[in-house]
Amino acid sequence: MAVKMRLQRFGKKGQPFYHIVIADGRAPRDGRFIEKIGTYNPLPNPAEIAIDMDKAIQWLQNGAQPTDTVNAILSYKGILYRNHLLKGVAKGALTLEQADAKFETWMKEKEQRITSKLNARDQKKRAEQRERLEAEKKVNEARQAEITRKRAAEAAANNPAPVAAEEEAAPAEEVTPAEEATAAE
Image (cartoon, rainbow, N blue to C red; front, side, top):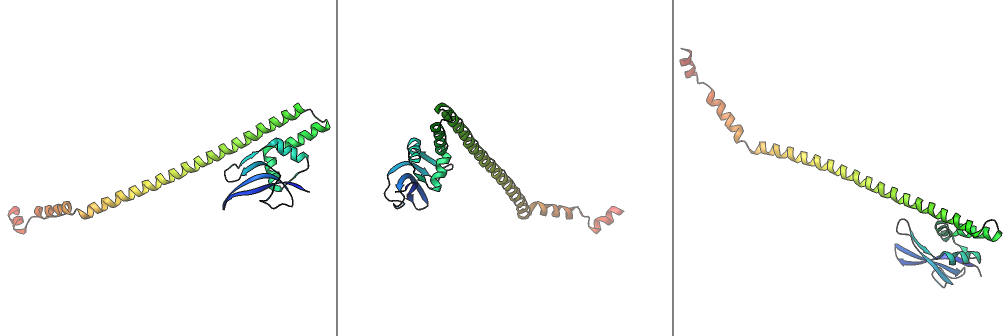
């Protein structure tokens, strides 16, 4: 009987949610399983993974074979590294305290990488939002200038009274030929 560590799919169409289970390799994907050791939600970024590390290591030591996706999940959470360190302890290459110290430093570095990645993503998102806001402000200023120019042109076209007054004032200043003759004498 080949024992596998694999994903069991739940959730609705387009919104997967998985249970990480230990199952017989011959059982159907969503069928019978031996034990549930965790959950995996791939939708958020980063994915939400909740897994019982002790049970996973126990099953790995008992010979359970993880599928490719579960192998990646175990590697991401550090379970494979922890299992590797425990094999070294069993062989006498290092002590349990040394293995725990190495694992803790690895976990701290992993958390820092994840945090820096999230911070960089948030900063990039804020910068993109700032750029969109600046572009929108420029477009709004251009629209406002265009509207102001059109309103001024419409006001000039719809308000012929000042222009007519100037035209009427100009003929009033003109001197008739009879007045010229009297002014010349």
